[in-house]
Image 1: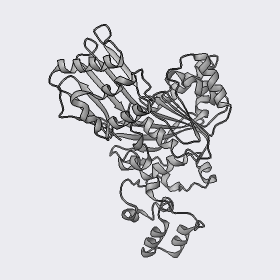
Image 2 (image 1 turned 135 degrees about the vertical axis):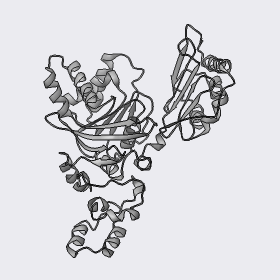
Image 3 (image 1 turned 45 degrees about the horizontal axis):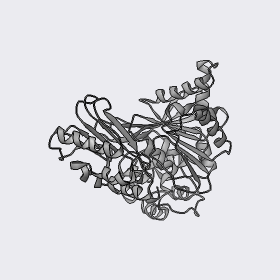
Image 4 (image 1 turned 90 degrees about the horizontal axis):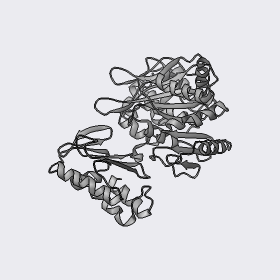
Length: 425
C-alpha cells in the first residue's frame, strides 16, 4: 500500500493522531512535485533537501529522484502552506514542525535558518514487508537464521535488538510479533508509532505522549502483573528503565529495541538502566544482572548503500562475554560462529526442529535459491532440510549414493511431521 493510500485510509477512519482539522486533512496530501512519489508502494521514505535534490529510499536503498522543484521559493511556499493547513505558523522564529501518523508515517519540515534549504522528510514504515520471507529475499537474513529467529518467541529469555537509526530494528521486531501463537497473550509498547499488531491476543500501548513518570511506572507495573507471555518494546529510550525493572523483578520474556552503534553499547545501556533503578549497586554487579536478564543481542546494521541486514546474533554468557552465534562476514554472507547456544536445550524441549548443525562454523547458509536447487547441500544441512518439503528431499536423497545407514538416520522418528513451505516463514 502506498503512502498516499495509507494516509487516505486513516483519514477516512478519522484516526489521524495529529491535530489536523478534518476539513483540511486532504490538503496535506498535496505535496506538489513529490506527490507522485506517495503512490509508489516500495518507497520507505522521501527526503527533499532543497529544490533540486529529492531522494527516495526503496527497500533500504537510497536513490536520487528525477523529480525536482522549480526553485527554493516554490519549495518554501509549499512547506508554509502545509504547515498552515495543519494550524502551524512557520517562520524564522518557528522554522520547524513535525507530526506523526498512527500507521507509522512521520512528516517533518524545516525552513532556513534552521536548515540551509527548506527541507521535507516523509518517513513511512512499511509493515507489510516485516516478515521473514521478505527478509530472506532481501538477504537481510539467511533461511537458517530466519528459522532460528522463529524459535526465539517460544523460548524463555529476554532479547535486545540493537542497531543504528533506520537499520532494521522495528522491522525485525514486527516480524517476531507475527510469529506469536494465538494462545499467547502479548503486549506491544511502541514509542515510535510505527507498529500495531491487530491480533486479538495483542494489547497495543502508545506511551509517546504520556509524560508523567510516576504514573507511567505505576501503570507498567500494573500491566506486567498479569504475566503476559511476551512483551515487545520499540524505541523506549529514557523509559527503558521501567521495562528493565521488570527484568529485575523476574520477568524474562522482554524483546526490546535500542539505538546503539555496537553490541557493547547496547549492553551498556541496559546496565545504565539497572543502575538508574538501583543506584546503590556496584557497576560490576549491575553488569552481571544485565547479563542474567538479557541472553541474546541481535545487532542490525545499514551499509553505505542503505542495505539493511542482521550483522550478528550473539549470546550473552554468565561471565558477560558476548559470543557470536551468527555473523556477517567480509563477503556479506551470513556464517555460523561455531558453538551451540545454551538455550538450544529449550529449543529441543519445545520440539522445535532446528538442527544443531546450523551452528557449525563450516555450515553453508542459504538465501533465495529454491530448496530443490540447494539439494547438493543436503548431506551437510540434513537437519535443517527436515523442516522443508521432506518428501521431495527424501526422494532426492534416495538417488544420491549414500549408505542405508545415512538414509535411515535422515528419516529418524519424525515421519508424522508436517512439511513446511518456505513461504510460511
